[in-house]
Amino acid sequence: MKFAVLVNEGPYTHQASDTAYHFTRAALEKGHEVTRVFFYHDGVLNATGLATPPKDDRDVTKRWSALAQQYKLDMVACIAAAQRRGIVDAEGASRVGLDTDNLAPWFRISGLGQLIDAMLAADRVMVFGD
Amino acid sequence: MLHTVNKSPLERNVFESCLRHADATAVIVLIEDGVYGAMKGTAFSPRLEQALQTVRIYALAPDIEARGIRDKIADGVTLLDYGGFVDLVTQHAPVMAWL
Amino acid sequence: MTAARKKIMVVNRKPPHGSIYALESLEIVLIASAFGQDVSVVFLDDGVFQLAKSQNTRGLETKNFSSTYRALEDYEVKTLLVEQESLSVRGLTAADLLLPVEIVSAAELAIRMTQQDMILSS
Image: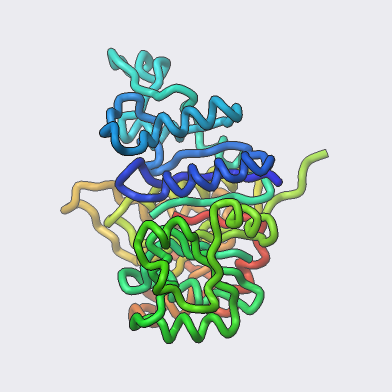
C-alpha cells in the first residue's frame, strides 16, 4: 500500500513528529511505500540543520534524515511555511540575500503541490499534528 | 473509516467530537495524549463504555506505557503497536486525524 | 488518460487568529483545487468561527484573510460545509457567516466523511 504522510508540528514541542516517524518507519519496514513525507505549518522546523539536542535524548531531525537515507524517502518542507519560519536551502538563501542556509540533509524545500502530488499517488494520507 | 484522536478527553473535546461523527463501521485509534481517553475510572469512562458498544477502539501501546497507565486501560480497548497501527490503516479508508 | 479526481475533504476545527492553522489550511484548499480535485471544505466545532462576519484584525496587526473564503468559489471550490450543531452550541446561525454555505447535520457530515478518498486536517 502507498502512504503519504503529513507532519504539522515541529520537533519536541509536540509528539506529532515522533508519531509520524514511528508510523512511517513501521510502514516502510513492512514493505509499504511512502510516497512522500510532507512537512507543513511548524512541521518545517523538523528540517533545521542547526539543532543540537541533548545527547541523552533522540535527535528528531537526524532520525528523519537517517530514515530517508535508508529508504530513499522523499521528505519535503513546504516553501511558504519554511520561508515564514526561517528554514531555508542554499538556493532560497541566495535568492533573498541571506548569507547562510540551514536545511538538514535529506530534506528538500518545495511547494504545497508536492503534498497534493503525494496524496494523489497514495492510497492513504496520514496526518500528524496537534 | 479510521479516526485518530491524539488529545485527552479531559483537556479537549476532540474525542467527543470524533465520537459524534463515528458510525458503527468506524474504527478509532487513540494515540499520543489521546490514550488517556482509554482509561477506566475517569469522568470520561462512562462515555468510553458507551462508545465501545458501537465502535471499535484501539490505543497505541507505546503511548500507554510511556504514560504509566497500562493497568488502568478499560477492557474492550485493543492495544496496538506501530506495526498494528499500519495494518489497521491498510484495512480502512479514509483516515481522519482529529486534531 | 487523466486519472479520476479524488474526493479530498479539508476539515477545519480551529478558530482563526489564535493559531495559523486556519490561514495555512486555506492554502491547501486552493492548491488541491488547482490540481483539479474534488475538494470540499468543512467547518466544524470552533472552525465555524473562521467564517464569522466582520472580522477586523487591525488591532492585532495581523493579516485579515477572511475575505479569502469568499474567493473560494472563484477557485472552483464550491462545497463548503458547516455543521449545524457546531453553530448552535456557539449561538450562531447562517446569518452570522460571511458567505452562504451548505449547513449539514453531524449525521450527514459523518456520512460525507466516509465518502471521501482522503481527509486533511490541521
